[in-house]
Length: 154
Image (cartoon, rainbow, N blue to C red; front, side):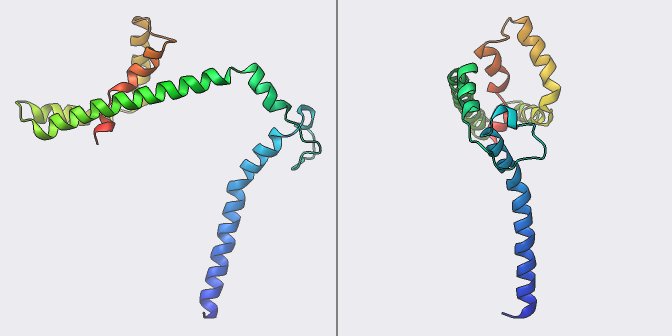
């Protein structure tokens, strides 16, 4: 291996090492901070390694926050939305690809056009619709706006 290749490779690995350091530093800080006692969180100068390891924060989060319910809600909602989206997307894809009907191109264009509308634009109308239907703070209210979308088809 010649000297030019070796120097390039060395510079490359040094740059990657520096990037890795800056990417991993917040994760290290998060783990280190989670193992500190509450009074040690605001101590200056910054302590990178906790003097005394404490799992009180983890115990408290499970006592104060209904973690099991949150996990159940996340798994239930994401599973149901995924299943319904895949089913509706497969049906729409089949109709658009195999069945010839009048207005198919127009309907397909509208279907594609819905993908160009940012989700931020639809948040307030979705909220107002769900409020009018009394579906706020319910599973149906969370799932309904995201069940049938065009992104699953492609």
